[in-house]
Image (cartoon, rainbow, N blue to C red):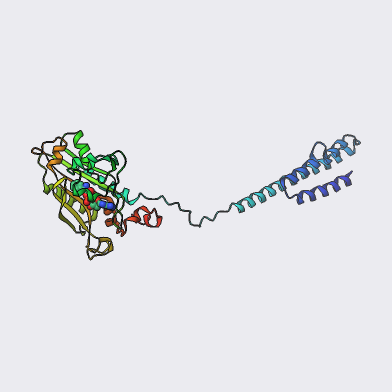
Length: 339
Ligand code: FA5
C-alpha cells in the first residue's frame, strides 16, 4: 500500500509541475482529489484495513493529500502570475511616449473678427441687430435714397431673385427696418452676410459687413470720426495708418470711405492693395435727410451717422492675408495659423 501511495505521489507531483494552464491543473486536482479521484479511492480503502494498518496508511494517505493540495495551490499561484505577466506584457504602456494630441480647433477668423467688433461696440453701448439676407428692392435701394435707374445701383452687382426679391448687397437695409420700427435714439451695429456678383483677390461674391447706426438729436461728423478712429486704433493698434477719403453714398451726406494701410507691403504698394498701399475697409457718413424722411423721422430734429465695414477686409488686414479667397478654402494649415 505504501509503495502504491508513493508511486501515485511521485506521478501526481510530476504532473502538477508540468501543468501549463489553470484548466489542466484543475483536471489534475479532479483526477486525484475529486469524488472519484485516485487518492479518494485509496482513502476509501483505508476503512477496510486492519486495526494496525489503518492509522499508518491513513496517516500516509492524509499526508499525501495535504502535500498534493499544497502543490496544486502553489502551482496555481505560479500559473496565475505567469498569466498576469503575459497580460501586462501585452498591455504594456510606455509612459515616456508623447501623448496623442487632439486639436481643439479655433473659431474661423471671420467669426473672430465679428466677435471682436461686436464686443468693442457693445462696450460703447451699441445694441446688436440682424436683418434678412433676402431683401426687397425697397429696403436694399429705394428707402436708402437709391431710386430705380440710379447709377449707384451699378456699383452693387446685385443677385436678383424671383418676385422682385434680391440678395442684400449691403447691411444698410437694416437701418431702414430698425428706424421704421422704433423711434430715436438708436445706437446699433448689424453684423451679417451680404452678396455681390464680384470676385477677385479682394472681392468675394458672399462676404460680411458690420453696419453701424447712431441716431439722436445732435449727432455730428466729429462723433462719427472719433468713433471710427477709436475702433480702428483698438482693432489694429497705433502703428497702422488710417485715412478718411471724401466719397459718395446716396444714403449719407457728407460721405467718406476709410482706408487702412496695407499690412502686406506696409504702404509700399503690392498686388493685394492694387499697388496703392491702402485697403478700403468701410464706407460711412451722416444719414441723408431723404432716408430720415423715408422712415418717417423729422430730419430737422434728428441727425445721425452710419457706417458699413467689410469684415473680410478687416481680417485680411489684421492677419496679413493677401487673397480673400483663402478665407473660404477651409484649409486647416491656413486657418490653424491665424490666431
Ligand atoms: C456699402 O456697402 C455701404 N452700405 C457702406 C455704408 C454704410 C456707407 C453706411 C455709408 C453709411 P461699400 O460698397 O463701399 O459700401 O462696401 C463697404 C465695405 O464692404 C467696403 O469698404 C469693403 O471693405 C467691403 N466690400 C465691398 N465689396 C466687397 C466684396 N465684394 N468682397 C469683400 N468685401 C467687400
